[in-house]
Image (cartoon, helix red, strand yellow):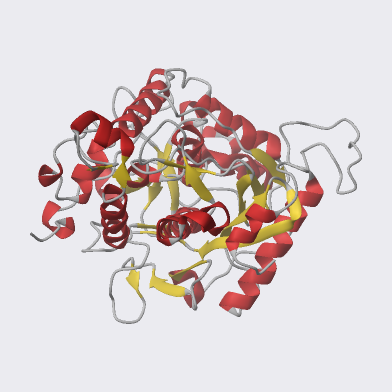
Length: 448
């Protein structure tokens, strides 16, 4: 299980194991196609536990951990952890240069997965043509020049120890705190615990700075009043992890930059260790996806298979909870971030998961792809043209795209898909998606 990721490509037939079957191939009794088989979820949990204790050198039991496990189909023998992170904090002020504002484990784990995807793209582009079939998890997307796709049998499965913050966690909190079901007590606890009441239930939620919980997002007619707190007492800085996961189900985990080079990548499953109520989490995600009917090719709705293991543990307290740690396959050591600053704990420098680092890698990949001769370019222009040349794509001229934000905006299909998803949520009365505040453009500017 510790072999190179490319070994996943050599495993036996794609999707050789399917949900609804046991490891011996026999059909489960009354299989639920929407639920991940428990034995597979247990495998994901044990792999994460082993890798966490190996890399972090700490017990998993008391920390909020998120991981991504890669498999060939649902073949357990091919499973390996490729990304992992811990964290429960979110900055309640403007992040500094290169700082990560949202240090929740699920968000950092998705960034760690992006780091793995960048490495796989770099491997593909550096490999000789005769080795590309086994060198990387990516392959060229047929009919789309300069775009790559995940190989059919490669799948990503996310694991989290706790239910994602936001609406996905409300059910579990209310089961543990029955006295908080009344509107008055729910309002009192709306900041300290992710509870809601009345109209707030089921809607979008934003994170409260410092890891104090979540609060209802602004609705179509402005911010809802919750908890009796004034805007100056509470700063909503990022959408809840539940809502971000719903977005990943609609537009993929690859983000805007990589959407220039990759087809959408969706999670196949989500396993929650401590929750025992998969139905509530499924309803929460489905409630956000069902109104989303205006889709832009190649984006789609893909709800992951869900599993909840009912594992019993307690949250950590103390200094360790102020740290966020991340690791990707191929990293020699984990990276520790100070959750109070969003920067590396030692030195105060930007994380390797920061947007600035990813943009530098993306620019190198873009130059490599643009330098590949294209037969289509020769046919249309009588000369060798890069695959991503503006002549072959309706992109803004490259000399005008000098910042990370500009390149993100230039990912038109992705931005349209995100816009349709946000509009569907708003029209369904679930609230308004809070877009990330654009930082100063010179921070991500490429020198001439």
